[in-house]
Length: 459
Image 1 (cartoon, rainbow, N blue to C red):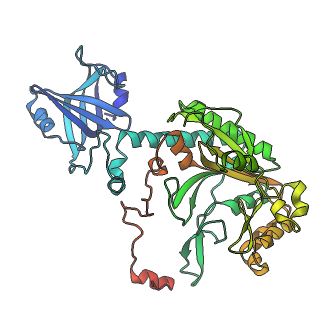
Image 2: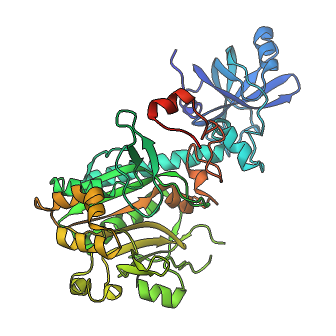
Image 3: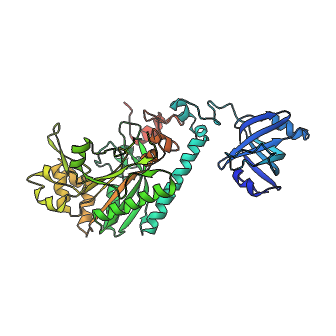
């Protein structure tokens, strides 16, 4: 007999079926025992009658979170005993056979009820925390959003291409996570902060339209909307303008909101503010444009465009990129790169949602001379340019098309859509506030032999 999910049982009135899952809750009404069985689809009420002594005895022994398998007959609940809040609220399963697949210790917190539990406890027992309805729904919503993105990008002619996780350490704005090479002692791979250079190289390769649900890694101080590893939607396209990218991405976001959520869009198309207007009017480059900020369903998107290409770093006495070094200057300002870098506007654009930057991108440099000039302006020496970026500059010499793209932090986007206080609530296995994996006990010490093989000494 094939297993049926809990919510599918509504299709099997008066039939004998097999279900399996976890004991969610128990209620005793007189001599009759009622057990709520839980699987990923939802809940199903099981009924144990005392006339079947052997089955009844097992039912009486069941405790929360035990894993069980049941065979029984689907029947209508008695009149007045229905539960309209459940998809299975009009039926129940009369138990005819039961197998305890696994017993369970008493959980460190309630699974069946939402109660305040310290985050450290939740993350230590994340596999139990994910059993809760709220977290299950978050994971299912995440799946639907990512699937929607993939289908949308496929329809628009984009190819999903995976890029390496072991790559080269280059300055991207945050610290790299380094991976020592055993085969090449004294050298290191880096985990990618973003697939930026690789997706640009794919444009040189003639792919033209690329996207990826990319895993990214940044060794930076943590906040509620940041994690050392996270997922982003990464997009790059050739022969494309800023208007093309903004229109494409805005269409995707609007469709996600309108087809997958009950949230309200404040305005569409999304308002556009120049960087100068945003700072002058809202004193922020990620303004919150909501009319009513306790309304959790109101979504106020806006684009912030026309960013300066550089900002002055007083401490280092040099120019720093406002976005990153691969962002292109606007055509009308290219002539000012040498004589007045501070006046140069860039092709950078950010998408802001309720005061959170959720996506950012730009039209890139595709001429090696301009890219080289920007490297020099931000203080990268000639020998360092060749060592860190020679591969990209060489590629540009073989016919690089005009190209640009955008990347969106999926976890942060979901955090706002779901009105969650932290991106940790949208990730299956996040790190804690101090960057630790409390469930696995990482980071952890390793055996001295492993360090010796890598030629590393721990100080």
